[in-house]
Image 1 (cartoon, rainbow, N blue to C red):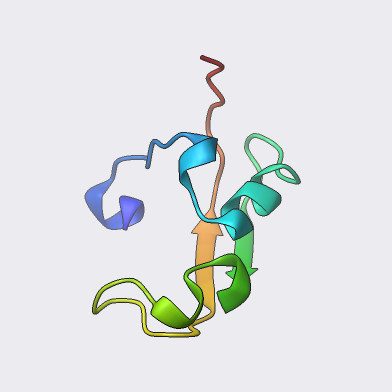
Image 2 (cartoon, helix red, strand yellow):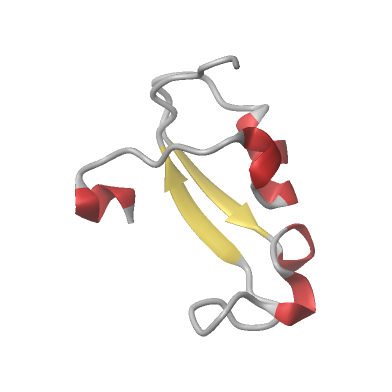
Amino acid sequence: SSYARNQPAVFAVNGVIPGWTEALQLMKLGGKYRVWVPSKLAYGARGAGRAIGPNAMLIFEVEPLEIVNN
């Protein structure tokens, strides 16, 4: 959790799950969002390691702080 680390998460939009790509396009800087990502837009039947089981819906709390174009 970036909240627990007290550090924002930094990532490239083209390196995230499809649900994030869709959600980020709808967000505005400074807004606060709760995002539910269905399994088919996340990790699907394969899951992701031990933390995310097969067919899991993911829930995120997101606050966009900055957009950097590279």
